[in-house]
Amino acid sequence: QVQLVESGGALVQAGGSLRLSCAASENIFRNSAMGWFRQAPGKERELVAAMTNGGELNYADSVKGRFTISRDNAKNTLFLQMNSLKPEDTAVYYCHAHFVLQGDYWGQGTQVTVSS
Image (spheres, rainbow, N blue to C red):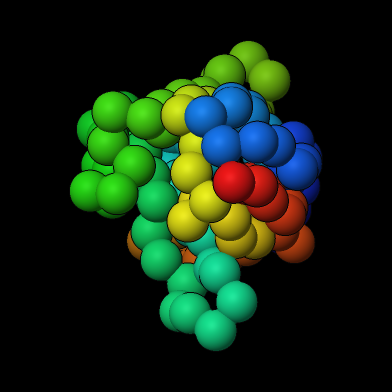
């Protein structure tokens, strides 16, 4: 069973930066699409950024130019660099892995709070 563990969430002022990490229990990047989702109170979970196993990237319009998704294959770790943070970025951020045959896996989430 794949396990995903996020870290890096914190309270930060508007305009600041954070880097989230997602450590996978095994080397899954070759066979899965990975991504970051977020869920704010009272809102649905939404895609923030995604990376296919081939390295193609996709970002939500609201974070383009500010957030960057990347991975370290040797460390089985996915990252989300978040710059120029805004109060509306406040949410619980979840790491996600999608396998064609095995289905979907989620991390437990990490809280990001941006103060104005």
